[in-house]
Length: 254
Image (cartoon, rainbow, N blue to C red; front, side, top):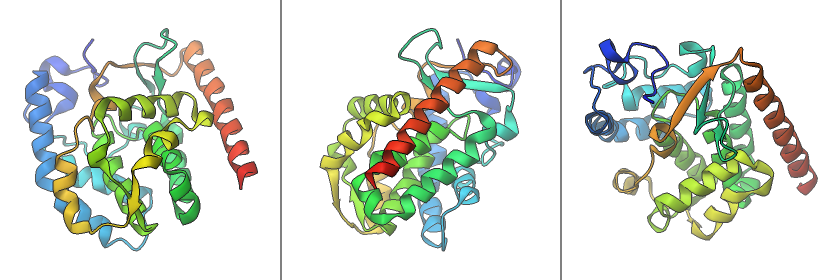
């Protein structure tokens, strides 16, 4: 099933893109071209921000994707506040649930608070990345936007992830598992071996362009349902309990 939350794929193309493209390959290529042409502008914007906040995250997405998506920089709560978004069918026990639209900003803000504790952040990088990925602020372009924000946050905490040694499948698997079972710290386990001391920002555009699979949580088997569905409401209730337990466990670790 085509991801069509606006309900106008036949006339406006995939997610109302500026070229009205429908073919998945053409969409991916044009979208990624917009991203690559804008990486340096987005990184420069982040480097010059005194502090990273939710508005900055929205702006990074706008810089990266406004050349392809007219709605770039607007979150799901503004565009489709009535829809829940999943990776996979909610009937599949391995499905991934993303944040309720009205709590996206709260989730991103929480990730930024976690990243502000620099020692804790270096010890638990997967916690921050997982929280940002769970927030899933945008209809598309989440992985690439979040990566740039995450790299800047790491830089300010004086460490980096050596992404050249990570693999697409292993990373996406750990990321999905982190979102499903946050208390188990799957992404911390995956990322910790790749932590290195700070690197120059000058190398980042080439590094980012070479990373594969950044759109893995955006285009692979994405589904959506109405938030009025009682079963969807119960899924969110259950997940909130998991998050609450993880945060209690995190507090006790400190």
